[in-house]
Structure formats: structure tokens, C-alpha cells
Image (cartoon, rainbow, N blue to C red):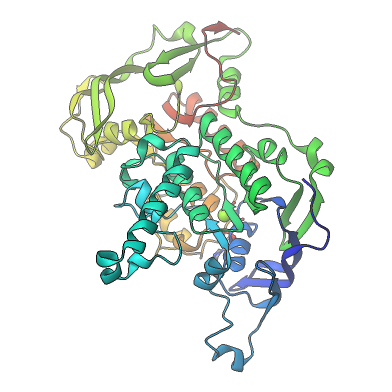
Length: 498
Ligand SMILES: Nc1ncnc2c1ncn2[C@@H]1O[C@H](COP(=O)(O)OP(=O)(O)OP(=O)(O)O)[C@@H](O)[C@H]1O
Ligand SMILES: [Mg+2]
């Protein structure tokens, strides 16, 4: 893409932000041109979301300057703010004002309206709606025709992102990958000209990733949209094909590179769990992949000794509904003790619903769940956990009002797994996305059957290595694991000897 020189839409100078004594942004200066696509990367807790929060008006920096030039009028903001600016109602750097000017964002933790449909979530963001006034909504033909137009464009965005058949689905009944796509459509419908996307691809399946990337590319090309994408580990190589610039946050500073300068340092780590299965299987071990209904696969290593192992968890003819929609219709499988299974399926297949039903968080319509030979269908969740099951639930947050040490004490963990990489005094609600996931992994109880729903989500490369090490240790101790992952590119599809 040809960028007009000097066509800067956003520039930042000397931005600083600390929380307590922790300096998150030390002295950040950067700028971005109209139509430019930037990859923002950095380890867990390096300050990516903090930077996005500041630039979208959701968090006030301690010091620094921001210049905006989205619609042709240059506007300057600086911190700390002088008292006379503080009392002026006109020049505040607030999220409402920035959305109005064309700054959009997709949150790392998504934040849709859960009881509204996907279409309503997108429509609601359309600016300047006449029908917000109840009287006009009733009597004005103009308001009604605007609403119809809003519905048409909102459906078009959802269609382009592969959700054309889910316009009426309530947002609490769609999968994580589908939620991310709704959030992108919502930001576009809000009129974003600069779009911040905080980990938009994590948890998406192959189709989702290519649909989102195609969509972003066309938005950047046709509408000269400026896009900042936060991502680490997975999908970096995909984003690098689109981005021209990379901002790397580390120790409170940002390093700016052109994409081709860092291309060679980026290896694709997408198949890390499959790699782990191969390691577990060893040179002579076998890996078996079973095709499941609707494009899912269940892979297990060491098939040689499967027959000799006892059945630890059996699921028979399970039917699961979410609202009126049947998600899983008559599904059966058996887990053998001491093995690790990877359940790989497209977004919306029902991976999280299946695990929710196994632990008793969501009821099944029919079918049986048998743990160590005993039927557990009628047991509440806490009794199933007492029978030595553990569950790492996707999108499940930590206790927001307890600090890290209190949560570790509650779950009797020592915080050794991630080498105390985050502050013990931080409240759960203030942790970064990856830090929350690490704390949840640390707090997993000791159990015989562990269900891990997309455990690598939000983790940086080092933390993924540590998670893989933990999984290996669990296997060595004879635990049984069922790990869900979104559908991977180039995953194994047939039984093969190694
Ligand atoms: N409101 C807050 N109060 C106190 N500490 C905070 C607050 N928000 C963020 N932090 C801390 O600041 C650091 C940076 O957090 P941030 O969410 O920006 O990281 P990140 O780079 O987005 O990480 P991740 O990759 O895990 O999403 C973290 O250590 C986090 O615990
Ligand atoms: Mg973050």
C-alpha cells in the first residue's frame, strides 16, 4: 500500500503510565499514518492493553502528548492536564469523544451485550441514530428508513465475517471466536477510521482467521482505515503479511521496526500442542486422529498402550442445547486413563459447551457421563470436582477483588510455575489478559481428569513453553487430559505411525 508521506493520523510523545510503583509505559513515542497497519506485540504484562486503553480514552496517562488528525482538524492533548483544561467540557480525551471522531476498538475480553443478538450488538453502535429518540422512532419515516439501512449494513458486515447464519443468535450463546467477529463488525459499524484490535485472532478457527484478515485488508485498502493489531505468538506470521510496521513493547519502551526487519525472527508456533503429542509419543509411538461430526477431530498419542488402559471418562449419546439451538446431537467418546487428548474443532462446534456439561455447569438434554465407572449425570459441579476433576474454563476470569496472593492461598498453589512473573499484591481485576490466564492455570487443583479449554489463549511464548512442560509433567504422573483447541491449519488428519 502506498502511504501518503506526512499523513499522520495519530502521534504520541513521551507517554508515561505507572500503577503504584510499577512503571508500565516509561517513555513511549510513536506515530501512525492513514491506512497503515501495525502489529503491536510484547510479552504478557508488557503494557499493550494499557497503551490501547490510553489511546482510546479509557485510561488517563500520567504524562505525555497525543496529537489526533483524523478528520482534517489537528487536535492536541497533553498530560498532566492543567486545571483550566480540566474544567472545560470540550477538550477531554474521553472514549465517547474518540468514538465520535472515528477511533474504534475491540477489547481483549470482548465486552458484547450478552442478552442482545449478534445483529443488535452491531446495530447499536451505529452513530447518530434518530430512533434513539422514542418519539421519532414511532413517527419519523426517516428514522425508520435509517434503521432499515443500519440493519442492512450491520448484516453485511456480519455476513462478510462468516456470521450470516447467526444474526438472531443471542451473544451469550455464541462461541468465543464468533464473539470476536461480532466485536469487529461492531467497531466498523460505529464508523472507526482508526481501529485498535486487542488479540482479535486468538481463539479463531482457520475460516475465522482468513475471513477476519480478508475483511481487515479490504477495510485498509478501500477505506484507508488505520489498524493497530495486538497479537503474540499465534497468528503473528499471518498478521505480518498485512502489517507494514511492528511496535514491540518491552520494559516500558516501544521499539519500532518495519515488518521485513523482523520477518526472519518469527517462527510459527501454531501446532505446539500437536508437537507435544509427538514428543509424548516418541520416535516409535503412534498418534491416532479420529474424525468427529461437523469437522472436529480427536487426537491421542501412544495408541499402542490404549487398550491396556482403563476407561476413566465415558460420554455416551450426549445431546447439548444452548437456548433453542442443538449444539451437540448425540456425541460419544471415551478417554483412557493416563493419556492426553486434543479436541480440535471449528468455532461454534460446542467445545466449551461439551466441557461445561462434563463438569455439570451446563445441563445436558440427554446422554450419560461416566467417571471411573460411576454415572455422574445427577451430581452437582462441586461433587464432580471432589471426584478429582479439574477444569480450566475458557474466558473464565479470576476473582477480581482478591489479590494474586490471596487467590494462590485459596487454591493452595505456590506461584512457582510462572516464576512469580506478576505482582502478588495485584488485584485479579487489574491483571493483564495473559496474567489472568497464568493465574488460572496455577490454581488448577490436583486431579485425575483435567479438562483444559483452549489453555494457550492469551499466553506469550515463554508461558506456552511452561504450560507444555506442566502438561508433560501431568502425563508423567498418570493424569488424563482433554484439551480443546480451535481448528489448526495443517493439523494431522489421519492415523499415522511416528
Ligand atoms: N488498572 C490497573 N491497576 C494496576 N495494575 C494494572 C492495571 N492495569 C494493568 N495493570 C498492570 O500493568 C501491566 C500491563 O498490563 P497490560 O494489560 O497492559 O499488559 P498486556 O501487554 O496487554 O498483557 P497481555 O499480553 O497479558 O494482554 C500488568 O502487569 C498489569 O498487571
Ligand atoms: Mg493485553
